[in-house]
Image (cartoon, rainbow, N blue to C red; front, side, top):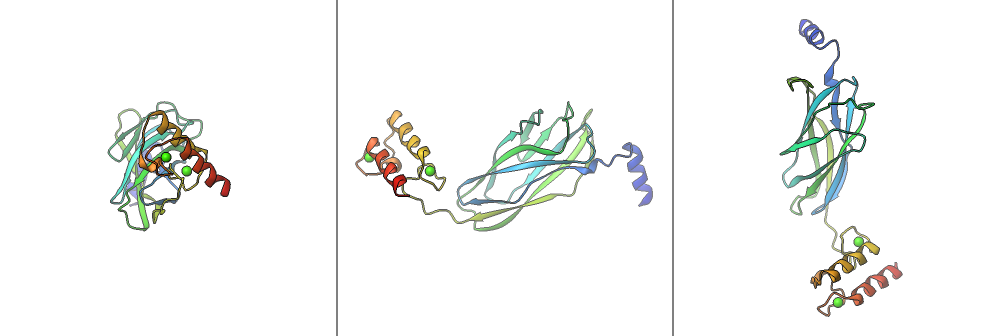
Length: 204
Ligand SMILES: [Ca+2]
Ligand SMILES: [Ca+2]
């Protein structure tokens, strides 16, 4: 055991690269909605490495997008639920948010708490040979019951605001008479429907 540890350290210039991994804080989402999760790099070596992180998601939860953080200048390649980044230029400090990911929670996902695993692997920047896998990092996704749906809340954010008026304006511009936006039920999407949103806003 001791010998193995020494061998590992010797081969890797006494740097324990297993100290590089992604983690995330617990999040809450409603059934049928999306939730953003910030992935944070924990980097205790500030070394130039490539990394890959696999997301292990519960049934009904899917990865819909990955947006690299501004400070993370590298491209993040997404294959299935694996994120891969080549680290050509070491960022000033490796610590911090690397990317924002968006997860879609299907409306069929039961209420409750789910553990999502982040399994990170770090590789040599030169040839992608594996250096180390880290212990999976877990964060909790709490799924809550879907909202009943509030009148006038057309974009589904739970509030009635100018953004919902914008939804009606967009529908009007597209001549889209979607019944969901026809709040007075006259079969058309018009300024009268905007008036109803204004009335709801005035009451709140
Ligand atoms: Ca709204
Ligand atoms: Ca109408």
